[in-house]
Every structure is written in structure tokens, then in C-alpha cells.
Image 1 (cartoon, rainbow, N blue to C red):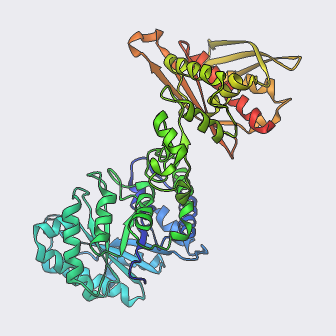
Image 2: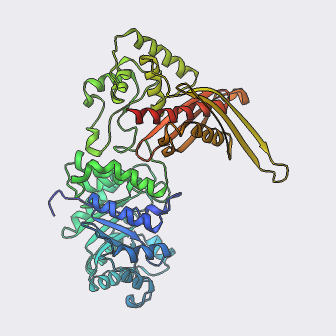
Image 3: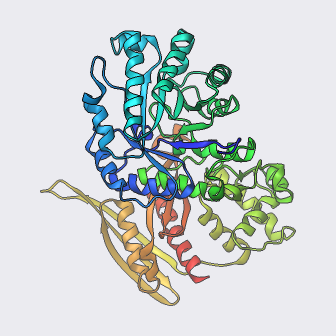
Length: 525
């Protein structure tokens, strides 16, 4: 291993799955493991054998994965107090997982030894040493996680060190210092890690940190600065409570900011794709503000910022977004100037003359629309259509003549139903369709699609992936203005549209029409 080499230990599939709202199927865990391997992650912690059927099924199937780089690790604890290690059922399950690596945690904090395990400090040390030695004798690479290490060390430094010595005597390949409560700040973590590195010059030291104080990434990097050569964390910072240290932030910081080397470096441009893939595997929406990989990471809204970024991206971007697979985005709002509009138009493949009278009129119109409640930051498709209509005189591929909606309920079933009628014109032909739906917006969506599918069959590829309603000026009660944002996809491209009205159905209809219009537009180009 090179002097500046840092090993990446991913525990998304174990520690990350303990996060609220996160749940992996077995097939999802297998797919994520393959993606982590392709990205160059060194260790993948797959779960805790015996804790649930899903983890056991994962380990059974993981042996069939054709991993090129990563090692799968099974996670568990030291043997129980007063139980011979070879007779401990949990240790047996760790071996039955048939992984090349086993990670076990042991108690560092005397509070846990006496009040949780209810054993003696001496027996706890024996539990650590016995378990590590036994697993090494079975041919396993052993990562020892010193649970609550920093709390234990601050409570009793010598006992904290003695637990690491026990693991070292057993033959542990890595001694990982766990900041389990997630409350320590940078200075104590860095100072204590440096002391451990000094006292264990022949052992590989790792850090495992949580984000309860909002500094999970910072304290992990502080551990590296202090001499740790392994970092544990999760993709997108999944984890119990406020999450684990976020590897999608740690890895680029190590590579780009700290001159450290990881085996992920050749694949760094796939980092955003990996982040999105893991979110998709858990059916969670991505955090747009996540450093490096978030959609907003390199987004510019203010006119001055956008103008400066257009002239020199370094002026407002700390790295080239492409290095991590991201891109520069321009957000259009009432703060926009000519430079923002021109950059946005260029991003959409349109050339716009910033000195034209139409540009001035368009800016005035945009600011008025934003004043009325329209917001185009997450509605690129609606903005694209607006720009084309205003500056190029382009119209929709169809003309809405009328729509009508009825909502009623059955007298016997007492269930509500919605029926929508849509009348539109495509070229010189009138289309008149009727459709039902499980709600007003659903009925309108079905009726619109039926009217268009003959001429534009590819709109059947479009599905709505998100529907958001925002009440503006809520003090007006039921007379308040409503903004509806719809996110749509055709399986390859995703786009957002917006509608605004004092009628939620009208606002929804406007966003729906923009959604299918944009699909027709991109398919015709």
C-alpha cells in the first residue's frame, strides 16, 4: 500500500440500512454491492449474519457475485461473556457467512462493560482477544471496531488503549476507532487518533464516525490527517439517527483536496451516478444539496454569480463538476439577468442574442411570472417552452380548446370517481376524449394522453415521478394561489414543469400540458 493510500470501507448495506426510511431488498443489496465494486470500494460490509433472514440470504447469494476488487465483510460482535468462543452461536454464524473478511465490534467504554455487558473489565478484554484470534485461525481477515472508542478513551484512556492491545494480540488486521455517538468535534478526534497511531506504529488504524453533531465528514478527515489509513462510512450518509459519515463527500475530499489516494480514483467521474443509484435502490429522493453529487452543487441563481461563472467557472465553482460526474446548472428566477438567460438557453442548446429587444421583454415577463408565483428552478421544461414561445414564436404541437372535469361518488359503493373531457386540435383535426381516473389529475392525464397518443405514441413512455403542491400566501385560506410542480421521466430523461393558479386543478393541468409538450418537443428535434 502506498504511503498516501486510504482504504474505503463501505457499510451502507449494514449501518446504512439502520437509517429511518431506508430498506434494501436482497436483490437491491446485491446490485449495490456490484456498483460499489465497480467504483473501487475496498470493503463492503454486507450485514450481520443471524440478525435477519435478509442478511443471511445476501451472504448466500453474494458468494456468486463476480467482484473484481471489493471484499465482502460480515459484521458481528465479540463472543459473549463466559462463553468459549468456539461455542458462541453468533461467532459461528459469522463463519457460516463465508466471507473473506469479518468485522467485529467490542466494548471500549467501561460504562458499557459494567452496565450493558455486565461483566468485568478483564473478561471484556478476553472476549476481544479470543474472538479476534479465533477468527484469524479460521483464515479470516479481521477488522476490529472499537465501539464508543472516543467516549471510552476520554473516560479512561488506559483501559481504552488496553482494548486495542487485546485486539492487536489476537492478530486484528485493522483497529478501527468508532465515534459511535457522533457527538465529538474535530479537535478531540484528531488528537486521540494521533495518540493511537503513535502508540500502535505497526497496526493499521481506521476511523468510523457518525453525523450527530453535523461533522461526520470533518472528523473522518481529521482522523486521516492524524494517521488513519482506513475510513468507514456510507454512501449518501445513510445511517442511524443523523447518519454515518458520507463517503460521497469523503472520497472526493481525500482525492481532490487532501492529496490522498484511493482505489476509487479511476472511477471518480461516476460518483454522482453511484450516489443516484444507491438512492434509487432505497426508493429515496436524492439530496439536491449534497456536496459534490447534489443537483444544486454547481447551480448558479444570482445574475452576478451566473455572469461570473460564464466567464470563469473557477470564480464560483471549487472544482470542475465533471470530475465527480456533475455539471454546471443555471437557475432561472426573478434574480436572473441577461447572462443567466443566455447561459440557460445555451445549456438547452439554444443561441440567444442578449442584446435583442426581445430579451429585455422576456426578462420583464419572467420577473412578472415569478411575482405571480411561478418558479422555474426545478421546472426546466416549462422554462424551455416559455423561452421558445417568447423568443422564437414556437407554439405547442397541439392547441387546447377546452377541458372539463367532473367528480362524483357512487351511492352504493360510496367511492369517489373523476371523469375528464379534453377537446384539442392537432393541426386541423379536432380530438375529443373522455377518461376516468382515481382522482381529478389522474383523469385529466388519461384524457390528454388518449387525445395525443395517435399522433405522438411515444408519450406513453412518460410517467410522473413526483407531484408537489405548494400553497402561496396561505393567509388567504382557500382563495390562496397554488403552485404545482410535476417531475416526469421517459426512462432516460427527467424534466420538471410548473403551473400556477388560484385553482389547484388549473395549476395541475398547466403543468401536465407542459410535461407532454416537452416530451413531444425533445422527440421532434
